[in-house]
Length: 226
View 1 (cartoon, rainbow, N blue to C red):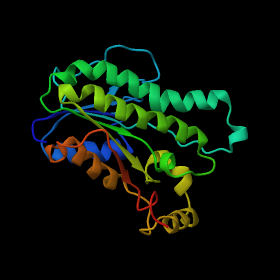
View 2 (cartoon, helix red, strand yellow):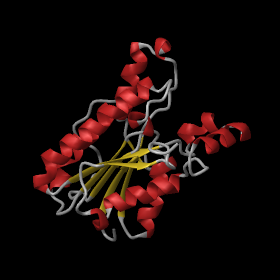
View 3 (cartoon, rainbow, N blue to C red):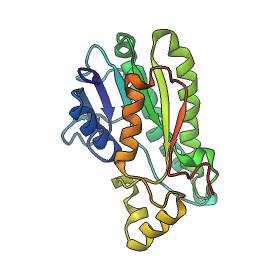
């Protein structure tokens, strides 16, 4: 990871911040973006753009972390809600990927990490909006992995379960909620940003150099165990 140019979208909070700290400790060159611009370069991924300010010429790693947690029964999800889920989770990623493709091609071993959710593989009530948008991300991951393999660009995704980030604060706002979430996971606890950051570091590093088109389930056993 030392000396690699790593671009992180959403690099000032949650999983993105934890990953930035991990990569910085390993000597990576970081290029951080967020909607607020706090401590990063400001980037609104919901706006149309073809270029991103401040990108390095060579991009060795690209991570797109923005997401949503809007849990509603299906009959209460409006078409605008569905559009917003797709805008943040999918279309924003597409804009960033297109803007970064030239830089990724210039790297000898580039790696892209996208984010899905455990709710794509494991049917969960009230998750229709987010599961649909992240399902699109999983399809994109596999398609780009195939299309970009000749350029030696690897594309993988991580599908976490509930993780203690600002995005999930409402779901973990009381001791009762935290306890209930712990009990739902076979390993007895919900995720920490560091859990996911370590998985992302693996996918960015040469240790995963023969891995592409995969969805890595880092979810405390949620997707496969009962």
